[in-house]
Length: 252
Image (cartoon, rainbow, N blue to C red; front, top):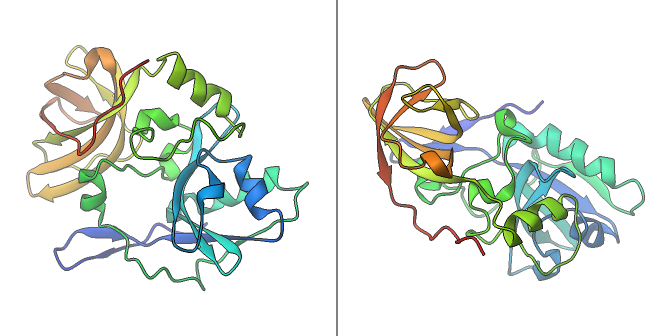
């Protein structure tokens, strides 16, 4: 398994190194079009595409940014999900002329990745090893971020994702919060309210300074205004709600 590696930018914020999967062969685009949430037909040398690959139950295995590279397709993914991503794609690729390989050691993207704090404040959570198959796309607000195309036709998990969109069945959404704590939660950690009721899970967390942590948390709509939370086995702590840089789509 490829380890999760981080470096630091000039401001000291941690930046996760990216991993890369190459799809080559005449059926690569056709194969992905029937597997992922975005419209692969919009991919071009000058236009990358963000998307997700889901299970048949609509739970996300990994997120990616797709790049066109001299006839091949390169999927940029979080390092901690590289093995899950490869296994999930290869499971569905047996009837297609598409070769799927890990090229993390040989591919270099000219665009430097966002730091973990920049990504968090942009409201863009990762799917990491601890959260594989935990969330459907709308829970991470991917419908607000351009990861979903509701007109492209069928793909794995499409029925669940579309139902959540058209029937307003998304009852948990991701929120940006600040915690007064020196302990950084882990992705997937359970969140409880002051009554001890489970209300959500951590999607992403980054230390800002010695006694402040910012998180992206997927929270049940009924408890999204909670002002105190217990995360994993930590003590109950006060939270401050911070704005996201985009509007969460309203239910139909």
